[in-house]
Length: 119
Image 1 (tube, rainbow, N blue to C red):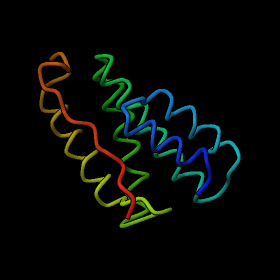
Image 2: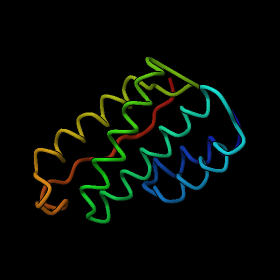
Image 3: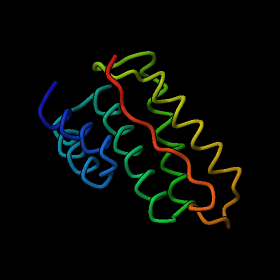
Image 4: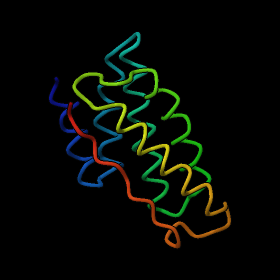
C-alpha cells in the first residue's frame, strides 16, 4: 500500500478525520475504476465522522450512508482493510445516530467512531 493510504488510516484511527480525508482525497485523484470508488467510500467515512464530531448530524448521516453503500461493495476485505468490520461499525453508528433524532445534539448520544483494522 502507498504512503498516502497508510497515512490516511493512521490519521483516521487517531480521530484526525479532516486530515484523513485530505490524504485519501489526494490518492483518490490519482486513481480510476473500482479502486477510486473504494477510496471515495473511505473519504466519505472520514467526512461523516468529521461532521459528527462538529455536531452536524444531518451531514454525518448523509456521508456515512453514502460511505456504507460504497464500502459494502468491497467485503470482506480490500487492500488489507477488514471492510466487513468497518461496514458493520459504520452501520451501527448510523443506526445509533439516526435513532437519536436529527434535533438531538450529537454529544447526547456519542457513537464511537470505528478503528480501521487491517485483515
